[in-house]
Image (tube, rainbow, N blue to C red; front, top):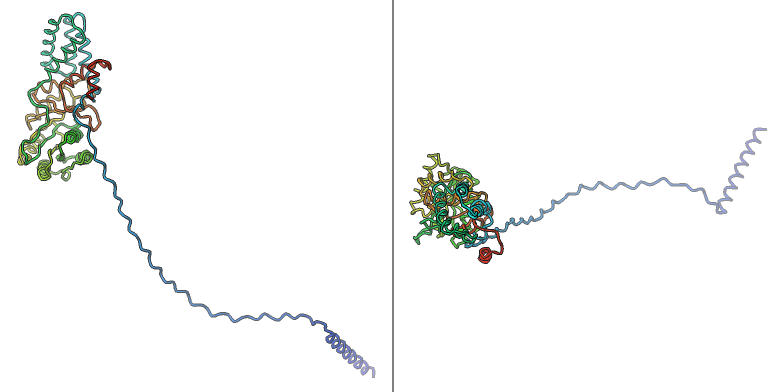
Amino acid sequence: MDLWWVWLLIGLAVIIAAAVTIVVVKRGAAPPEVTPPPVEEPSAPPRPPAVTTPAEPEAVTPEAPTVEPEPAVEVPEPTAGRLVRLRTRLSRSQNAIGRGLLTLLSRDRLDEDAWEEIEDTLLSADVGLEATGQIVDRLRERTKVLGTRTPTELRALLAEELTAALTVDSSRELATSASPDRPTVILVVGVNGAGKTTTCGKIARVLVADGRPVLLGAADTFRAAAADQLETWAGRVGSSVVRGPEGADPASVAFDAVKQGIEQGVDTVLVDTAGRLQNKSGLMDELGKVKRVIEKHGPVDETLLVLDATTGQNGLEQARVFTEVVQVSGVVLTKLDGTAKGGIVIAVQRRLNVPVKLIGLGEGPDDLAPFDVAQFVDALLDDGDATSPDTVRRQSVA
């Protein structure tokens, strides 16, 4: 009986709880929020890999080749009066020959000691023994006649004697060809170290400055640098160079140079040769061959021997041997600005009767001047007085 009541009471409680819940729902009570489980969207099918279309290569515009501007052709300064402009480069010889002799001759009493000093001055300037004796003898005689000697009279006297000592019968002008069918051919020879190739380039400038188109032949095939050097000199004045491979036959190159000069109608063909030692017979024989091969086109009009003025009397032996091999017709004295031995001009001419035609008075491209006796003597006796009539005249000429 007791168990039945218990179950009855439980059932009533359940019914009451259900009734209360229904009432609450009806009155609008919000049911507790129930968060629905997330719904997974169906995954998109995998995309196929993108196919990259290769880009067309950009059109490459070829770069225009760099064209270096051609070097401007230089116009060498005129040769007329060039020695006048370069007179100051003879300052060492001015002191030794010019002012030295004038000072000695100006002494009140010219005794034997004074004449010995005059003689020593001339010998130390490389005038040479024979020429020195002749100059001293004539000065002795003429100073006795003058009696009292003013500086002007002494200067005029010394100028006359130096001019006479420098005078030769041969022409100092560079040769020109007498034939209209071929150019003048000038052969340039010399020993090693005399500055021959550089001088050859400067001679080309002298010719161009005087209105004579020139072609250069690089017959010094033992040194590639010599041909390169000639091309540099030639390019500056718009000339061309004929060269061969290193070690080629120099005579063949010289022959080709003259041949091209004839074909191009140039005025002058200037042939540079390798430096020779005057005591090497084989080298000198080869030089003779170069000249003989050139002469198949016609005679060599001029053979210039380049001498270093600082070598002094040794240059005379060089000149003698070269003259025997190739018949030197003129001398180019280089480095005359660097020595007090300007008397070598007299010695060379007296010994060989070969005129000095050009003198080098510096390292500049136009420092090679045609030799003029009057201008040279005037420069040696320059007294340095800017107000003197001679100086004023020289400045007006320059």
